[in-house]
Picture 1 (cartoon, rainbow, N blue to C red):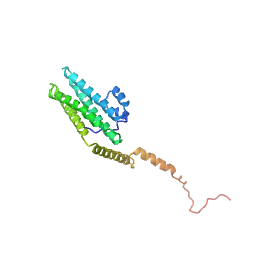
Picture 2: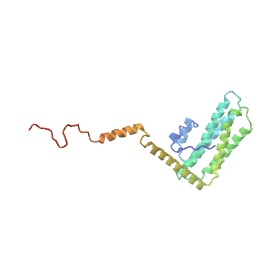
Picture 3: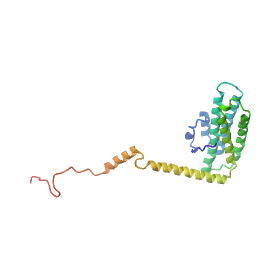
Length: 215
């Protein structure tokens, strides 16, 4: 299923931490800022994962199921990223009217390939059956998003972004409350003490009585 990535894709250094991209792919993504062009690049990455998987399917060798499972996990992360790019662009009011057609065309071919693999019932399918079903569901969900009314999706994305901003603000506010951060509270207490007037030394004289100066 589609997993929402609470991340802005244009902040590529943060996104680069995701391990479903290779170092070379991260560098390629950094060079592409326009959303639709970036979506096309991710579709290429997704196709490459399935092509690699297809090559493994014809080689019945030990350890291939683990490699196939990893490729499927990478593929699912890439498809999720495609949806996040679209959402991010909509939130930024960037024109991505051509994105739905681009995504639908590319993902239809990917979905067909995944379904053919599933229908072929490989002998080790149980080793990556969950990941395969997840990849199929994620691709189907992503394709469904391309059919949604763009204006309605903009409203949905905007609402989601505002909700996330409020959640962040609430967390920050909670952290600023006394007791939430002991170190910060101690620092504030020290600062308050520094601004207090110095205490006078104790004296045995009564109020109004002055010390004898010897004169």
